[in-house]
Amino acid sequence: MNDSFFDSGKSFEECRVAVVPVPYDGTVFFGKGCRDGPEAILKASKFLESFDLECGFDISEKVGFFTLPEVEPVVSGPEKMIESVENAVKEVVNKGKFPLVFGGEHSISLGAVRCFDKKVSVLVFDAHLDFRDDFEGSKFSHACVVKRLKDEGFNVVVVGVRSCFDNISQEELRFFRNLSDVEGVLNSLGNEVYVSFDFDALDPSIMPSTGAPEPDGLLWREVVSFLRVLSSRKKIVGMDFVELAPIPGFEAPNVLAAKLVYESVGFAFRNKVYPDF
Ligand SMILES: [Mn+2]
Image (cartoon, rainbow, N blue to C red; front, side, top):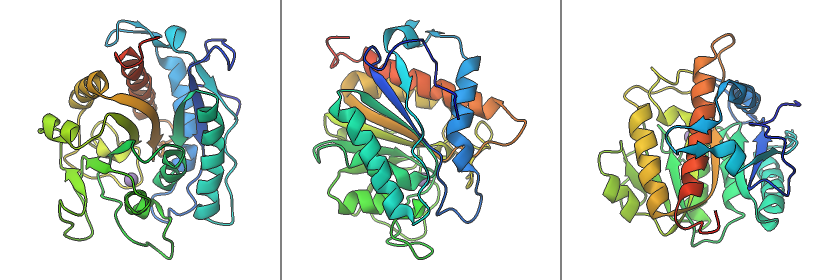
């Protein structure tokens, strides 16, 4: 894979954002295909125009995206794969870069989040709670990622939930069905936020390219409006976008994914808490 996300011809040093592609779907048995997600996002980014009307500036020019080599899939299991992601992301965080991780399946988010202090809240967008203690023989399955993040001591808030395996209480995990209570979501988060975006949080009418689509999902405008508010109130420290399983020959969802990534980063950097920007 030689593609890059919005190659603006800048060096690693000049870019604020380091893109980490993770083409891994090892624990997915049903609805595979998200290993092709990173490549689809990189390719689709070529369709976007770089000046962004939502943000009012050229995000690629102002922020700069540097795409790193992909994290090679590990065959010995998800736990080792998550460690590989952790090592790759730690390297970019240590160099002061904003990590932007493309999955691949949702389990990889655990590796990226581990690179941050426990005071960072994790905001997960997902149609499913991903709160199982284990799934299909693994504690590190994509269906367990929120449970593992909680167990590792992070404040986790999930938005977009329409499907759950059990009756999980709000005391166990703070979650929201949609974005009708924006203040409720914001008040559940600390000042620093890592965003983990599973594309199945979106409605299948606009995002059919996921392994586990669920009806009645989030729509474009409400997500973009929310991200704009979120970024004006919180410091976004890193993001991942996971579970895009491209449908061959159907580019629109991939372009939507690339545009959501692009504007999310624009909002994050426009935020007043990045004063040097
Ligand atoms: Mn998920």
